[in-house]
Image (tube, rainbow, N blue to C red; front, side, top):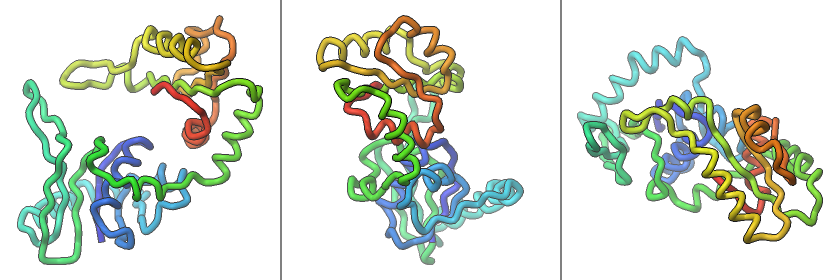
Length: 237
């Protein structure tokens, strides 16, 4: 049995889940409250118990989390912990982890985001298969684009990125020039590009690229948008 009480949205959940499956046997049950999005998106997320009751979640964070820390520290249970280092006074995750083996057949994965390809195997990543309902909707959405075009997605995330802090500095949203340069690159290097915008700020995209031909802005769910990404030939992250 594996316990993991981290947080994060769809992208982080992907890293976390594949990290856990790469480190632990696929048949082991994972108890978590943070894998709802990937469970909704993929057919192949198996042996996961998602705690959904908000009061139970609070109790897990408040009481069980410290207990698991203690048991792992005493090596009564096994654990995986992403290592960290100091960068200008801030704690930064490393691309290595520490594994300890405990007395009882329970594994505790310390809260982490595991945002490095060094943490997972391609085999486990490739087990993830998108549910047909989302692929079908993505294909229907892209069907409106004439076949002569080469599909290029642009993922533009703003909202929380505009205040999110890294090393104490707020704002990790990319400037408009980044996307303009990327668009220009594809216009110059591939045949008949058609740009599919995936964003959490459609108004910004519509205003910033209003004069741009050969484009469409998706208003689908993030699950359909993820499927759209997999169906495009090129992309801008």
